[in-house]
Image 1: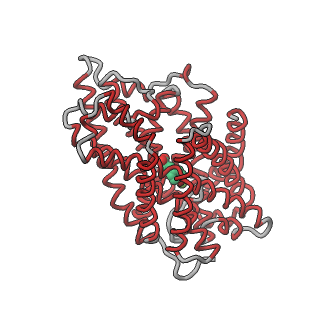
Image 2: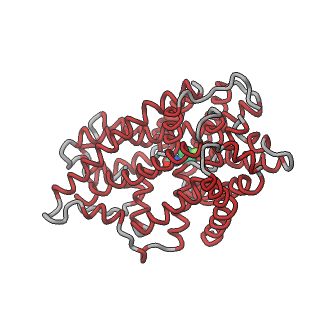
Image 3: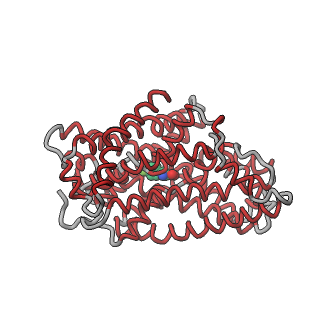
Length: 447
Ligand code: PFF
């Protein structure tokens, strides 16, 4: 099992920042607020929270537990904990790693866009765009393979460099600096946005519009598809079932309280999604824009707004730094499972393992860029849908079954010594029944 020299998180704070950094990403700041607004606001929020706490949290805690108990990440973690069907459950671990690897290959492309916009905002070019020029700018950028490849490769190199530095020396150090800065900027921007909306709305309407848009339940807009979206978003946002939490768990010390750590990460991730909405929507409503503007919102609509907002020249770089940090702590967590697997199962040294997996994901990303520009029937979009909506939830079901049905309960109880019996019983019940049944039902209805 674990080798003597195995790296570990040097503090609880470091682990929380790294795991929250994995969870908090582009998904929270842009995708969550937008799909929440589109699928019935508060109605979506209620179902999303149910998915997060009844499905996401048990799977997340289960994954941390598997990694920590096995003392290794990757496919080997699953087989190390059982006597029968080792190979079969090893494939479940591999499925997660494969999903994580594939997500890395395209997550770094979108992350590259944030670098392009960060660079342009530093050059003072973003806060001067009007509606037409920001649309033209985005379209020209999308049509330029060399520029997209440049930023994708640049972002991937930064990710590879950090992951090469190891768990405590690379990932933890970087996350411990970037996450507090990110939270600080986020809260600052949310306060600014709410204040702006309040000052620009007609007297009396105040900040109510954006808050209403996000929190007021509109059940008539909540469809079966919304249910599917809520589950997919919860899994994607918490970074479950992609090998990340198993790998991160394998670097946790034996005396850490996994239940508490998991809960902190889940709550932070959810709060940031809500804060993301409080940054975006007040700005959107203050200018009477369409909150359902789609993918272009942060790359097309917002640049135009920055040119009209007081202090836009400062806010634009701050906003894109926020996105860049969020994307970076997530992309390092996406690459790590593959690296941990190569180190633990194939005895690679960390640096070659990172270079091999990082280079492979980068090359695949270049393929997505080139193939989507050739307009090959939306390959890029389809692969994202296939992984996020099918592969990840399927793997989440299998992990819940592994924890709820296959793993020895006495062993599990010993891994959660500081939790009450009631917490433990609920945890097992959720893994055994709720996750498999609910996720399977949603998947069948959604396909
Ligand atoms: N949770 C990240 C986000 O919301 O953007 C995306 C992500 C990161 C998914 C890491 C999966 C993962 F392993």
